[in-house]
Image (cartoon, rainbow, N blue to C red):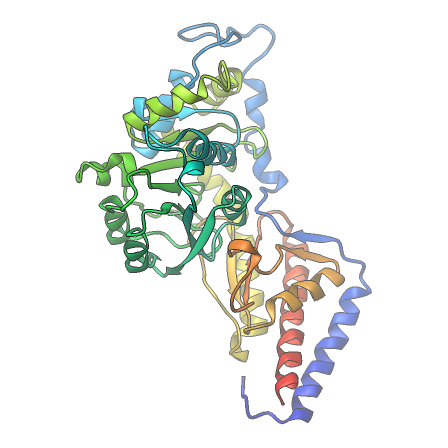
Amino acid sequence: MNNKLNRNEIEALLAKELKRFSEFKSKGLKLDMSRGKPCEAQLDLSQGLFDTLTSKSLVKGIQDYRNYGLIDGIPELKKIIAELIDVETNELILAGNSSLNLMYDSVQRAMQFGVLGHAPFNKQGNIKWLCVVPGYDRHFAVTQCFGIEMINIQMNSDGPDMHAIEIAITDPAVKGIWCVPKYSNPQGVVFSDAVVERFAKLKPAAPDFRIYWDNAYMMHTLEKTDADLMNILWAAKKYDNEDIVYIFGSTSKISFAGGGVAFIASSSKNIADIKKHMAFQTIGHDKINQYAHYLFFKNADTIKKHMLKHAKIIAPKFETVLNVLDSELKNLGFASWIKPRGGYFISCDLAKNTAKRAVQLAKEAGVIFTPAGSTYPYGIDPNDSNVRIAPTLPNIDDLTIAMQVFCCCGKIAYFENILKQK
């Protein structure tokens, strides 16, 4: 935008947007753009899961799956997931429906029992964690709840700032890093081969340092072809460094968000250690749900085709968001965003010191976004500019209105901020 506009011109532009804002408020909107939830049409794609088992079904593979046992999951589904993420079945544990649960448990185990024989984190003094930003608020909430000091690492167009990471891990108090390596939350970045390679050969000062590789969007493309992500476990094996990584994921946005199957993959040594501690938590996860997933999907190729059906549903929604951003904000010069190839979010940077105001205004107009600052540890965005947009849940009409409200509020916040400075 032309910063040479005089006060009267800016006030006129602000008045125009305030008038729009008043009109939006009068509509009584109740729209939720706050979380990356699948819409009903996406969930309907997996409705056949309920038809795979009946009261007459034989729920039996290597054992009767209605009974206790198999703490690491049933072999039929393990084979499919192992093929999807390119690991060996002995490097994989299937669990319940929540990968976040597995991540929390992994931090908890490290805090209380240590990692592969090393001292528990809670006996090592001040513990630190690297957080790629903008990032996933629930990751940051996990480390914050354990009192772990979080350090920001900036995301670049090809992945995190690896130079900053390589410097940070010379501190033995740094014990981990949160990553979403494919279609990252919220920017949609896919880590390049060069970045994954540098992760794979990291030599941190702390022998109990782990990369928390949350591959939540491992095949969640918005296009006809999926982006490639180098396999970090296999890359790490080249450097005899496979113990450094935990890979997390789930079928939560493949089948049912509330009834999928989560997993953790790592070196066989890490997996054995995890299973040892997990044995005190459970006698086995929901094997019947795991078996239903196996019966429904049958193989890895079916899942890949299934995900293209998801893409067909949600890609137009992403296009809608991007079109409104382009039409409302592109020529004003104070906002920027990235067109993702996949994932569940669009990251938008508004003018500095305006995101909180814009999100609050949108809430007053009946449109809820994830709170500004949530994409940073402690909820503190140093620039107060980043907003995560979740396009998947609303229908196209609601999405269009929600984004018009967002842009209107972003402009109000921007004009108000300029007037404060004049």
